Length: 188
Length: 174
Image (cartoon, rainbow over all chains, first blue to last red; front, side, top):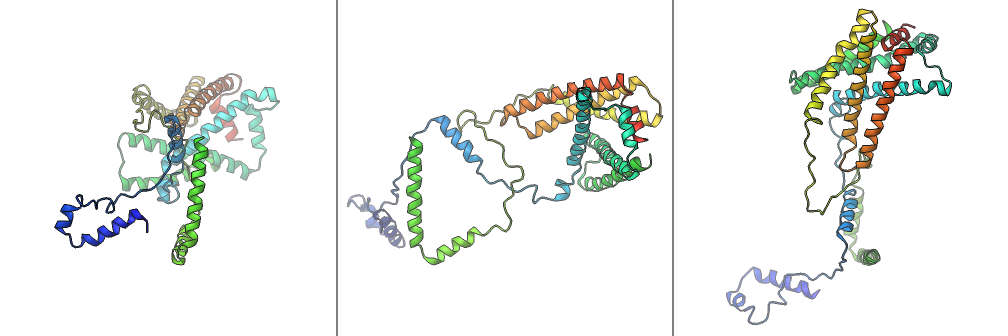
């Protein structure tokens, strides 16, 4: 048994029945040190600068566990939420525009033909199903983004911003955008 | 020097724990082995934390950014106005069936401003200024350059080619 821990076991034994004579005279009889409850743990410390300490802390923070969020929370709100998909559809439409515009400016240097006439001719030569498919891939994000954009503008004016309504509206808009996308792609 | 001392300390602690492990009773060892297999799914890091940055000492509060109505309130209102204005602008040319270069130009400008604003929001959300300042600056300036390029391209398309609405109409009905 370690000498320091012996004090705690002794204290536990006497705690059940405190003795007034003992407690009054513990210091006088020099019994305090063996009854000490402080543990002596030999440990080495090093001096590091404040910058090193901050860097160490910043590195250690990366080891903290991250609470699961997207993997476990209500997938209807997180993976199919309308704000997320408004952003995704908007980013894909704008991204396509940005890429096409850059390619259009670079085309003469690279020998490509990206004028509207050549694109229309190439598109017209594709089979009907492929044409419909590509048009749907462009029409559905546009319809979804427009409908949800209007919905968010209404929310900004605090119209229709209640939990039950939001859940229903979300599903109505998914359906409406799919129907509108198909109409625009196959019937226009 | 400090790192050498630290690694030697770690080695001492590791060897001490190894010695005590051998002398621990069998029950404790099996409990530890069972605890290690507690997780039923593998750890998947969706969106791991970005690099951590500590300004000043650890006891200083994180600096709060300066509020600015131009960056905040007015920017937001301008955003909503452009978005609301785009709704009739997009539908009108195709519904009316007629071409108007001025209308087309306004539509292109509106789409450009709306796209730029949207991309800005994405960058602001996913590249925080406090933790990744250089990446944030890079992305913002890259976006500005890209928007200028797209503006030029749209101008070229309007003047030398048929224009956005007419091109879409022709390709759609090709």
